[in-house]
Amino acid sequence: MKEDEKLINVIIDLGLAVKELRGGVKDLCTGVKDLHKSIDILTHRIGGLEKQQQKTNKELSEMRLSFMQYSDAIQRETDHEKRIHKLERMILK
Image (cartoon, rainbow, N blue to C red; front, side, top):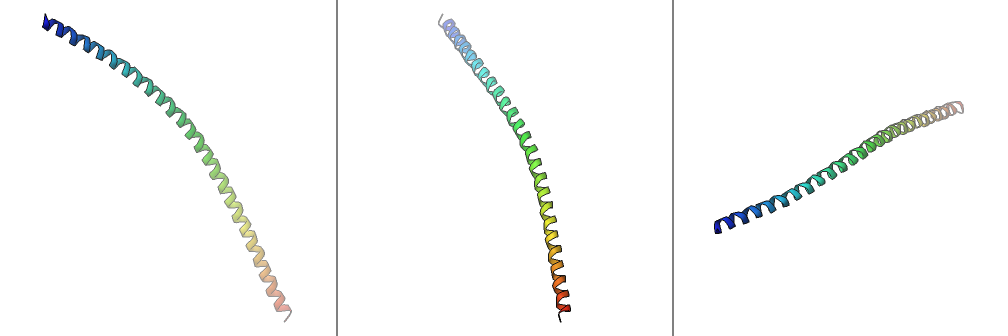
């Protein structure tokens, strides 16, 4: 009888442990689903940030080109002034 009672108690304990394990597995599955949702949200946000970065890079490139063109225009004006001063010095000698 004692052996039967011990066996029954072990089976009951095993059943309770399995029930507890199932609850843990359900919680784990819920956590994994939430994690997947978070990953999807982050992936979407990263995609938006990449598009914004591309737009910013394009605008910076256009701005850089404008500054280079402006710099070239200033350099041409400076060159013209130098030539005019040189001509004035030659004429006024």
